[in-house]
Image 1 (cartoon, rainbow, N blue to C red):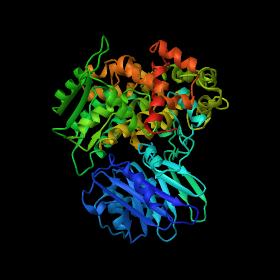
Image 2: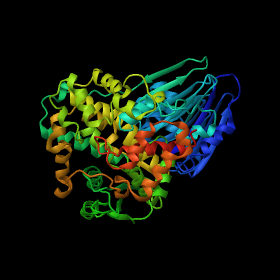
Image 3: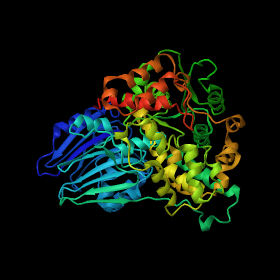
Image 4: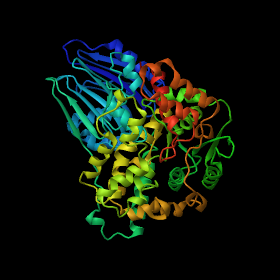
Amino acid sequence: MCGLAGELRRDGVRADVSAVERMAATMRDRGPDDSGVWSRGPVALGHQRLKIIDLSAASGQPLVDPQSGLTGVFNGCIYNYRELREELQARGHRFFSSGDTEVVLKAYAQWGDDFVDHLIGMFAVAIVERDTGRLVLARDRLGIKPLYLAETPDRVRFASTLPALLAGGGVDTTIDPVALAHYLSFHSVVPAPRTILRGVGKLPPATVRTYEPDGRVTERVYWNPSFTRHPDRADWSDRDWQDALHESLTTAVRRRMVADVPVGVLLSGGLDSSLVVALLAEQGQRGLATFSIGFEAVGNREGDEFRYSDLVAAAFDTDHHQIRIATTDLVPPLEAAVAAMSEPMVSHDCVAFYLLSETVSEKLKVVQSGQGADEILGGYHWYPPLAGVDRERALDTYAAAFFDRDSAGLARILDPGRLADGDPAREFVAAHFARPGAQAAVDAALRLDTSVMLVDDPVKRVDNMTMAHGLEARVPFLDHEFVELAATCPPELKLAQGGKGVLKEIGRRVLPGEVIDRPKGYFPVPGLTHLEGKVLDRVRDALHAPEARRRHLFRPEYVDALLADPNAELTPLNGNKLWQIGLLEMWLQSHAIA
């Protein structure tokens, strides 16, 4: 897990190495162990390294392979790198390191743009061909690793974070009205390739983009799982599905123990992270380090779920660590979490993840996490109402449960000059639902949430907050083979028992019953779920700041009404609407967006 940066000039001049150095330097938190810069003519690459696999200098980056004529920078982890190394050696490739970065380069040398089809893992990668000057960018199937871009007619810049691109300079930082509409409607999700800034985009997941020396740009989506029933599995019983998913998830958690440093688990006490611990214990892991976070209760709002995480830790004899956060001023960690965001994210879980990661990183460099199970296996409350709904009604049903505002709502809150044409979020979801490859309305919603919402909310949140402390988070529920299998599972098995029914049945084989049949939980941060005190003051200050007044995103009367009754307006997902607009302003001001 690292931070990468680079530039490709399109105007015939040499790459701006100093800009790439500035970009890479902003990501020192992501890769505190080593750094490097490489340039050749119109291309320059920069890297910040977190040493996880092959701790020697041989795997330092940018990695130059004279044999193949390739230079590359890589962020992520390839879990099958040892198997690929053996295969590539059998094909005549010689290795000078024992890490996964060199395996990625040799895989490209062997298979060209199809190299991504052979990789099992999470990754963002940039590869430069010495002899042609060709630049290839690629991102993993589920978008676990980020890759942002800033393109002009003269150059292409890319980096693991949006703030890194800002540090390079020359970025158009005007607000994209379509992205703003997504943020305020689609519960802060801004789908790729957009970001909130007009001059910054992001490479979509499962995409290989190639910049040819003659100026041509080509792009290929290399993975698109089918959310339909598989004929070879038509006669599977409920037990068959449980067995198959159990086996696949077991493989996924085993893969994510690949490292040359210890690997722990973030244990919330919910079904998903508890199952990760149980499956590792099944495979003989002993003394596994586990970590849970909790906040002091505020009023009648509980701040921890230790009773569940303690139960799991005791059942599997883990080396468990309770991280208790006292009721103090939450503004400093909130400010730090906002600064760590590549894009504005409204979930108060960000602060919890930030504080959790800060403590965990003092003991470990790698953890597994339970994110993704709800999107993959139907754990959210908006899926059951879609069962049996036809496609024409499905959009309304989904929007009623998930959208924060419609186009009329946007018109009521935004300055008229900030409005996008039409209803971008609804139009985006409608197009996604209409695509072939999803059998039922529930399948279409699961596909949307797996490929879009999950990528640009929970997964991004975990990456940003853990990497702010040089902590690598691995997500076994997003193993692409597990996702492919789960996508073909009949929706009724997923929706059973209030959601994730098939996963709960797997859990009953290995977990205490109290963990399985408990109410669904989240990272509770009582001081943020209800705006009051210093946090409310900070939101008010952000919305009244000179920058906010100059920007004039929101109608003043709307802001004043929210501040007069700060906890009155909630989204369908119980998000605070004042927090949503205040967080956006805090993020813009934190990153000095004019």
